[in-house]
Image (tube, rainbow, N blue to C red; front, side, top):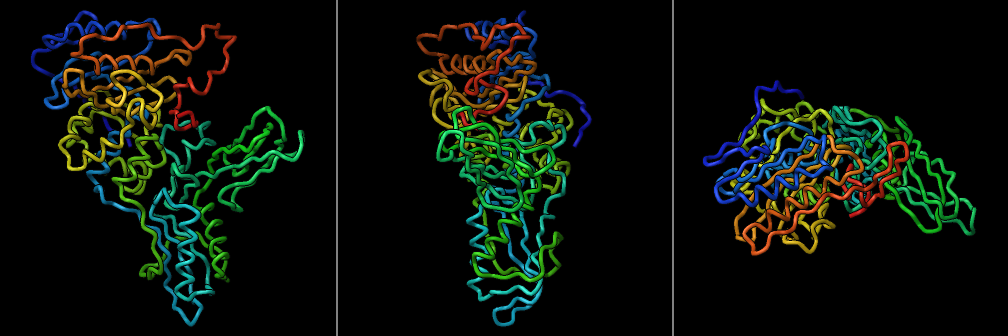
Length: 509
């Protein structure tokens, strides 16, 4: 979806004056302004594009601002808008349904007609729940289907990725395809993926044993992995379902791999479920829309939306966010259009932003820190606010902030959404100052170099806000660099220090 940009949303508050450094200060906050200006003057941010705004969570008064009306990429901070507007549009009690249906008739233990597996977009479906659907059908007395297994994934359109996504992210679990018929192989609801399990052989150099979970005939494992200590690499070849496993391991190792066509994976898994239940399907498989008037034979119902937003926000789950968009409108374009009808109620002008997906993975998106804090403030007036705020990562406690700001005034205090892409980092959320004042803030950094540490900038700002009004302000320190080697001698950044991906996406938090 592409909106014409008519103008930026600019926060305005009485009593705010611009400083020569581009910050803003309300009366009595000169010390805070000076400290935030110092943090943002760090040489590590030279050449970067940084927007910051701090506002009173109740009144909306602007306490500090620097380039906060400028639009840029906000990465996973966009999930604040996606989840808030989905709660408004769909409702906190919304649930997804996966159904077995048929237009045929039952004669004894035979179902004469096609059996339809109809997806409603539930991203949390698992092998076990598909098995339970098959078991329910068996419990109704059906042992033979005299017809085809019809796989209906037409609830969503066929575009698997959002506009502006990077093609080379395709193999990785945070960039899976969005489908109305999908499954998650793990407790974090990594929809559209399979677990690749690699076990060492009996002796050094022996071939490793590689399996997938759930077991399926949809993907092809091509393994040269052996028993050793070099480490394991798992990568799906572009545009195919060939998953190449290489390297070596002496301990059992698991990786997530995306699949091409999640509905095809579900088809294979459900066929095995029917077989395990003792149900024979005589007519093969068809991919088409369920016939009108097909009777529902069995239903699986998901958890509530208000519950799903917990793993979505805590773990910054992209696939859950994209399901919200397609649930709202069937496609990325129409889904964003439908969600945008609720943006004005959250203080966001649809004609002043660019949004193409729900996760923030698109490089085409344009949003501002002012817009993000407007969402944070307006959300406080909504009936679903308590559940929504409780779904945000908490500094030093859980989610993508579990390892950040520990043993500081921000720990257990800051509740905020992280955002990570190559060259982009952001943090937007709530903080209570030492003086007891509730604030909202947004820090969005673009054009940040890979070897700098933009998350340290965000943490220092959040800690300084949490300390405001206390007896001692935290010392402002320089941002450390991860490497100082010349460009031609670059070395890979350790996984735990990467800022270009959310820590939950690569298992470091």
